[in-house]
Length: 149
Image (tube, rainbow, N blue to C red; front, top):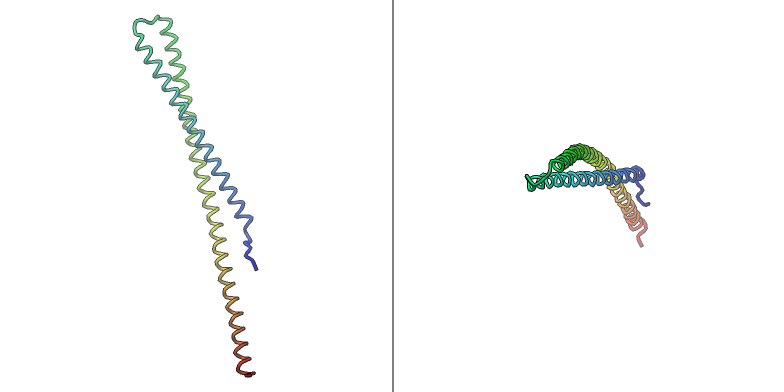
């Protein structure tokens, strides 16, 4: 008699939920990294523009200076938005990490239950085999004592 786990479908479902949570977590981490890279890029652009203005010093026209500062203001607004997006992405990563840990725990519980049930099955199988061997030994002993040749 082969071992069949009664709750195998539940274990399979928990496995799939855990895998989905891992994929969701991975996507949220990728999004966070993308937001971080965007923020770094914007900050570099802003610093580069500020550096250019400083280098040009008095050699820049008032109109150019105004355009450059408007661009820096635009970059600053984009940086603020990028910081907000990054903060949202960090919250999303935390939420997905929590869900992943919950799914992993649920899966582990059902997996441990399966292991426990399997160990009990093995013990019962060994016990049944031992009982059968004992009965065969008693029958052999009885035949030898009652019907000696």
